[in-house]
Image 1 (cartoon, one colour):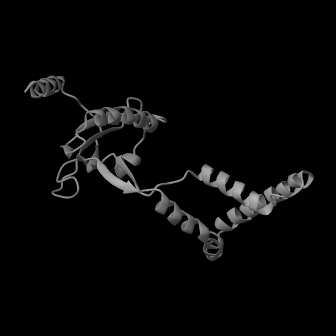
Image 2 (cartoon, rainbow, N blue to C red; image 1 turned 90 degrees about the vertical axis):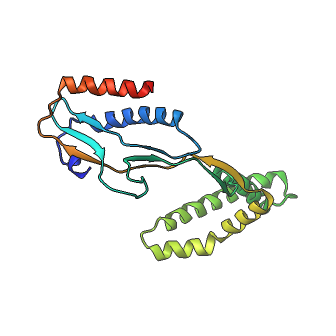
Image 3 (cartoon, one colour; image 1 turned 60 degrees about the horizontal axis):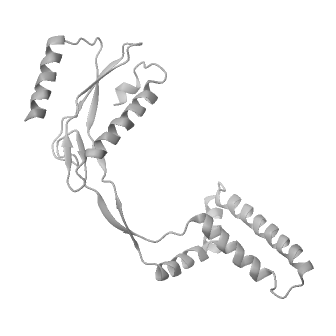
Length: 208
């Protein structure tokens, strides 16, 4: 594949192939066996008609491995248990509501609730900015210190949430693995007779 990156391609060729690949992959997933492995050996001829760059994609010669000697393998879907996750936006909303209620006394006069709440909002916002700046600081030790010192409650809350809410079962798509090589062709020639014969063979195989 590295050689293909050193060849001359028309601008946009990579994006175009990516789009085409997404369409083809979607079709593959629609007909995929969700409960078993799928193996195949794609053989593709890719040519840039502007620059003349041509490569052939074939299975890289090997035996065994994750693709079991093939060029492509799609693994079966995986059923897994994952911790219940509370959306970050909901977490922030709940925490802010609880913090402000703790800071602003419930028996405070109406004329004081507004200023007190505003002061609480400002302090929380300042703390968030400070925390963010320290978390992304180039000094890794400083960031680690901040997380250990001030972000320790997050894990404790997540543990409590897990005790309340059961683990969630979910199914994710199986992994797709490829073992292909891109072979550059200096001057591509295509025998029309061989192409017709290849199409006939493919049609016969589909009928069987």
